[in-house]
Amino acid sequence: MPLVLSLLPLPVLSAAGPEEKEPESPLNRDELSLYTPPEQNYNFIQPEPGQIEETVATVRRSVSGAVRLLVSGKIRKNQTQSPARLQVGKDTYSYLSNPPKDFYPRAGVIGFTGILGLFLARRSRVKRLLYPAGLMTISASLYYPEKAANIAKSTGEKVYAGAVQSYAAVEKIFKPQEQTKTETEKENKP
Image (cartoon, rainbow, N blue to C red):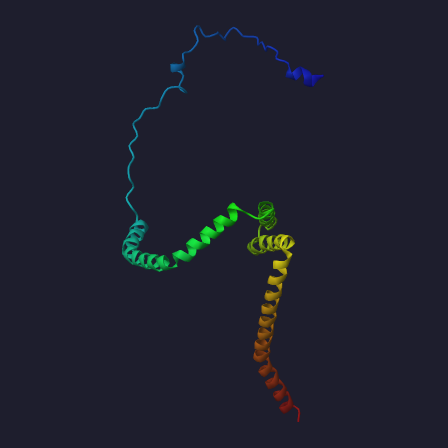
């Protein structure tokens, strides 16, 4: 019942003492300070550049010519590669304009698992890299198992070859030390 009474609009009256008097006339909107515009006497003074700003400006001016030459050289180099890039763009556009069945829901789920991985990997830079990549890989492998099996097979072979090479390198590094230790032990045992 008290909750219902709190929702009802009731007038609140107060007892005015003899010292309090009601204002004789209501205030105009122009008289209130809230509605009056402030004075426009602003003078902006540009601060003088400091030593760091001057050094940065000098370095920027001296490097800008070299950067322009590098960029123009890269632009010329990219102009020869642009037909291939243009073809990739056209292929991507045609694929996305006529996608296979259930492409967008699958892409949405894979992207969502990446965002979920970022959410789960708080407070660690390594986790921020591994969790989204791992979860997206798992969800993509659920939707595309044949491609995932092919990638896992080729990657597994490469990882195995790298592991064998690293094992051989580590063995090569530590084996001479073990041989010298055994030779010194044999010399110490008369």
